[in-house]
Length: 523
Image (cartoon, rainbow, N blue to C red):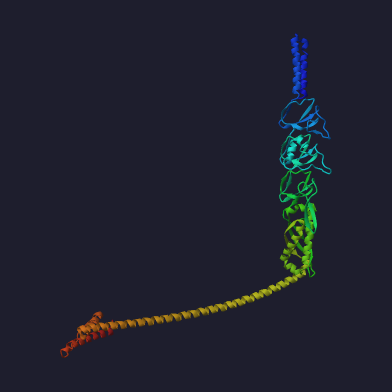
């Protein structure tokens, strides 16, 4: 409100006082005067009230009733006359009289997503001699100093000039009279690269790194000036781009080609000389990669210049391949390409590790050309053809010998098969013979046993009924078994004892006649 409320009170009071000549009665005039005086008092009282909107801060400048600032300060931290360090937050504020104070409303500082705020302090401790940026403040201390300007100028020990720390995304009720803020984008480290931080603030670097052959370099720790030993992984970082410089180093695997024809992707080829005096070009491809932990060393030594790295790589490749070629003959070099690749990879890996490059592989393409090795290669080709022919002839000989051996083996196998068959047949005949003999012996023994049994049976019967009757019974059994038709013969014999014998004789004769007749007439 300020002067507006005072002027309004005075105007209203003047209007009331202008009506006094027309007012009758002393008491009414006195009341009008008192009301006019009250309007002036109210106008003056309301002039000390200040309102700050929600998205703003109030900047207070004190014109009276305070001590003068000393030491060239321009911001008053302790109520001195001048621009006050503390700001008014959104809301109503009282007793900021227009004569004593001047209050301005400013927008709050808002740092957008993906941005950082570079801060410049217009007041504070002076920078040291040669110092360009204020000392870096660790942790949340810087944010506290920005939000509390009086603390920044007193106990916080803030320095005047560009601040090393930055403001990150958010809204800040800072004093724009003390802090000037410029928004810039975050520092982005792309995938496949690392960021090497070059600090423009701090003391001398203290980390010593040996780089071979008695040489060494110094890298910086946090708070030191120079190339920082710690590198940044891919991502976005809220860095002060005025205090720090980020050098991106590609850590992807790369291939450089040394070919007979220069191209955008390669370099001119490497020419070598063999021990037997042949000079010829060699197409070479080298696969290499920057190890992230060596990126700070590379920047410190070569400034991160990829051309310088490739220059060093080419020099090492040329020296190694020429030295290796001088130890072998041209044909051996051509024929033992794999061995040359292995040796070259090992030697180049050792050499380039001195500058922080990791060699993944060395591959040899074409070796020589028609002009350099044409005649030698033609001779080698003819020799190879002759060797191939000789090898083919020897192979044919071996095949013939094998076929001969196979035939002989097959014949031996066939003979062996026939011999085995004959042996088996002899064994079968012997077994048949033994079987027949055994069967005959068994039959003979059976007949003998049956004959003995019959004889014993006949003897027993003869003892009981007499030999003649026993013989007659046997004859009758045979007649019954063979179905013989009996036609008795009449035979007269003399004597009583001969009756039985005569009958027997007649019966036997009859039976023999029947048997003879059956044998001569089988049908």
